[in-house]
Length: 150
Length: 118
Figure (cartoon, rainbow over the protein chains, first blue to last red):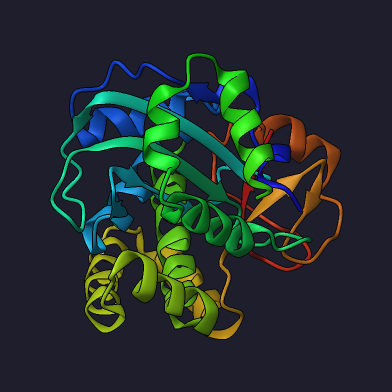
């Protein structure tokens, strides 16, 4: 399993318009191409997860995630906001890089946990925040995942 | 979408989140990576679930509680005409009509609430 297999170019935004955490979550959900009602429900579930504790893991990275009935397979998206967004992260610093992961309650191949783990591991590599900040095109994001072998 | 179905979806997702926090690998990751406090999180989820269950219509509420209590899943997706609770095909007429999720449908075979997924 490779992370690059889950990301599509359409689900990568290197210049989020969002100014707030809620706006960022909505914008990332919007990258998944769901209908309006499903987007609303998914946003609500992501907010509920954030209310339990922020998914901002520090080093300017956040990984909002949840399971929901409104998706029929594991979906991921990546959004970047270089000026940063207040995400109430562990280190209290603004978040620039946001990885969204959503999955249905039951998956045949059960990829949710491994994908979440790999993204967390990827985000902890020392050079990743800086490398992500330098990317200019979505293809370079995919290439970075491949380079890191995650 | 029917407002009560929307509520049911939200409740089922909350139950899924609750179950996930009791599942060791994910709970460990939530603690280690996200610094989450599982016990506090479970209390918050329980309070929200109680609040939302109180907003269900009585007939829907009793069916919901019955399924959650016994089988763990009260709301299941319909994919390609198949109920993903019991894996039995739903009637074609139902699938066509319920595709917009504008009504509350239950599986004729297992009785769970159905949510049509594209």
